Image (tube, rainbow, N blue to C red; front, side, top):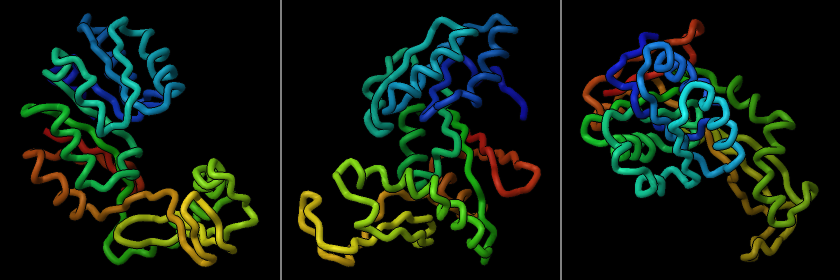
Length: 230
């Protein structure tokens, strides 16, 4: 994938974790003696520390912002809202495209450029293989986290994965009535996590109202795409 110098100076990365998207940009900037202002955004302090530590090998100008994505705009210094590249990896799939794409445009400004990554489904494709990944014990454990925090026992619920409204839904059904803190009857369903999936046409239609240009870069299996938007 080509790296465009015009979008380098101020990358803002949503949900960086290990910053594998920003590292090639940071390395390029150091080699070309270009000053880099890196702004990682995450609600999780640990992930911010991981990203900042890795990028610090290439620049000292790092402004970590601990906040939900929807609330980070007011915390980004005004001087960092110019020449901006707003990035998000597969975390993109955790949000409806109609929310995350306009949010990235708003944060980046009128001349924003953005980078997103997403898995792509084919029209009329069989989604069984996608659902199977979320049926694994490890996926169930992650999805059960919010209920565990409320004091729910694994024996109080049954786990099921659905595909509904263009998204994978990780759902728990109560085996008995519980106070959570509102009382819920046995048989109530609670969706604790979702992951959106789009066809190529659906994703392009989501992007078009906000970015005039959309350059898709496909993985070899054609199941995952990185899109550069401007």
